[in-house]
Image (cartoon, rainbow, N blue to C red):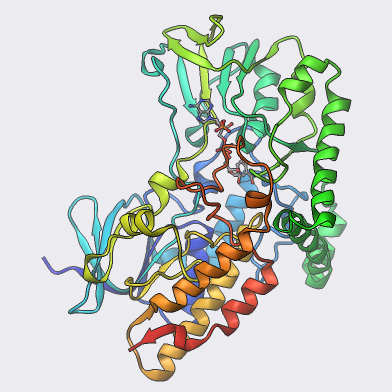
Length: 495
Ligand code: NAP
């Protein structure tokens, strides 16, 4: 059977894949396809639909810079609005027609003789493409905890990434496992409906107050008529978020360490005002530095633990039985609904999300595990020609995914422009340039809260299995954009 041939195959139809597709179109490519295992676009904003879902970055900042959205209803918009934004952008830039849904990609292999990628789909079909772009996101493989007895539970089990809208929560006896960013949004919603709610916390999370407000119709009209007005607000929210990152990244310097402590003091005060019982407050208090794992925003989370029908369990889970959870302290909580807010398997299942075999049979997942997690400017890897890995180690600029996407689009622009100028068909980052970038990241991370701070008990997904904080690119957005716009072209072998 002849395989379909494309200039590019993008894996993932979330904001990363949509951004890559817009960039390909800007560069003149039309013969490309975007594959996604789900039945619609939007990535994490399509998959996640749990009650309370909202973005935890101000929407003025959480959008493509080139596509501000005057229709956001509030500063921290809800999940369905963000999904709608994804759909609107895809339609405006005419990338939806390139998308194919319910397609699972098994793996990709570089064919060095033909200089193409062979992309294997579940079901046996193979596509070929000159360029492969994986936009599989960082948080896309749900983690189900391996707790003894969990499969014997007789009631309803819901993972937050597979919310069952038809399931009625009113009056239920609910247990939720996990207290990450998802749980912090979901727990207040569950508490409104449950007859009884038990929260199983393993590691407490830092929670700071959320300053949120609606955009009035007049403000929205202003944003639509004068986009610069929205850009001005974005400049403020961008700067604030950059500042947060800066504080985390300069942990060795006294001034920034003080600021970091100031942020934890704010969370402490928030906890103190919300929870008067010192025992309960202690249980909710993290023992690692602010910033070691992603902090969260909520005005209701701490307070609801003071409600009589909400219980906090911190002794751990021994096992699960057909009708309840037995804690390490021997107590059994009888429940009919078990909510798993247990997050994502970021490193094992996602780096990479599919098997990728490069030149000379180099297996990306194995190579990363044997040689440290790394990718030049968070996007290319030696021995993987014509491959852009958007969800890479040292790629994510911290809090705002869109800044990450946009420097990656600039990187593509510069690289493909040079290829066009030379009439070339392949690019590959050199081992030397990649090693220099890794050295730079290793040095920069030394100053950060991850290395200089106290993160030992945080259980943070910012750390890879070898204990290195290799998820975040430890630099301000403007530096990443400068590097993407000016990297030496000699860093690549272009042929
Ligand atoms: P997460 O931060 O990884 O949290 C998972 C939670 O489940 C943690 O509290 C973890 O405890 C607990 N857990 C996992 N396995 C467990 C086990 N076997 N036993 C007991 N507890 C277990 O996942 P998440 O809350 O889904 O959030 C992931 C990321 O998604 C966030 O950091 C954020 O970047 C993003 N997010 C964004 C938004 C937004 O923008 N609106 C909303 C939600 C999430 P430990 O900490 O002890 O491991």
